[in-house]
Image (cartoon, rainbow over all chains, first blue to last red; front, side):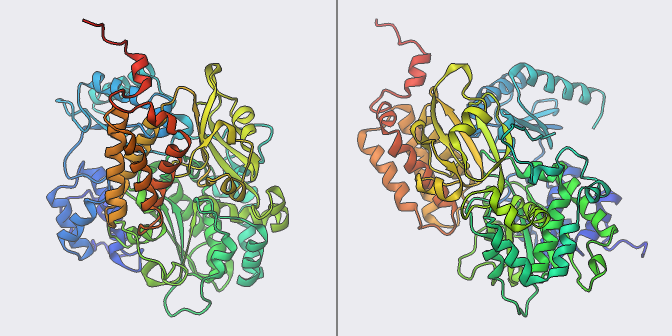
Length: 172
Length: 437
């Protein structure tokens, strides 16, 4: 194996850059790597910045417009930063029947932010989301990618407190 | 994290390895793993497809199309490469079953892909998971890597002359991508906009090549069919509805959960025995039998077997196996509105009947729920929904229209109770009438 990276990396960690170098080789068409690349880049950088869009376009040999067209379609992809812990409350039917709306309202009051808002300290952001596939364990919330299920307002408080403590300890 | 719930009536076929550490490939091998793929390799494409047809397995994504038949549509000779595509974009509200398969038995998905690839002689497979399922993508990626390391994937699988590559792909949040042609667009690195059919994916699919696309549960069931034999498998279910499926029980139940039950299992028993009945001594009002897109059943319509044909006969659909139970306190207008908000949010906007239809229905239902509607609006809601049916590019429009028609048809009285300034009776009850001045 060559030690020379397949693409001159500018903004990603060496591990992510190496992953992308490999990713584009897996498909019959390079462009197929676009959605995973954007999501994984977002996970590392926090959002899809101008620099990320530019580099993903270059790596795939497509225009930045092609990348932006894709970003605007997918609800997980974002061009603005969110909180360190992005609290996503499901209010779709199964969660609604078991208190999803009340849970969202509780989070809104507790975090003192509106839907899609970020707390001033940048620790939390809140978003009402569509079904996250936790219907039998409703109501459910995803914080970043972690599922929290069978929640009540008081167990939600515990979840938030744990993340707050993590943020204070500087953990990721 | 997500676990199976059991009941004495459950039949552990798909869930045979759940909770047994089968994410580890050696454990999977101990539990009869990859034997089915070896068997499939021995018997060859034609026999595989015949076995699949004999199993009476029908697509678990929602449409219930016979899987063996679907596979048989792929042309034997093709200038373009063929592909196997696993749809694990599980996003239908009420549905949380594929998650369990990826979490507890990822190799069953890999093995299913191998058998499907052998059946149509495809050299490449993709396992597409929704982006929210990050921890499952990691589990699936490890399973695929382990299968490569054992020589079950890659060049000359199991020492044969057959090559097969498999890639695990992530989505990034889009219900529409669960639609087969939109999923292929997404996998090609584009917006998930559906394609017109015909041609069907079996002829012109991913990268223009013949493609079979199956739901994750369907694919994960395939090795089990070869494990116990198609005839045995078919016998577990009802006529033309072979086997078992994972039913996701949610909503107002004492014991919500994902249960593996035989096809054709009685819905009343599913609610009152398996699910433990309705909490707080309340009465059942309605059931959404197969995910949010399936027309609602009333409390009087639950004496049916849960298979594609019987639920179809009852005027609804078995769909994705998401059984959502509603007690007497639910406002059906509010429920219809929440359902429509979802479809309006998820419509890709490509075709007008769906984009405009879902938006107008959401607006109309919002107004009705708030008490701002007149009698004619109820008819208009139904009329609009009926005119979306069959007129959209892909089934998302139908998925939005069908439940709406059902709600209006079966709960019209509740819609009328909201009319002319009255608003939601549920909210009226909660907030005392303002005192007269």
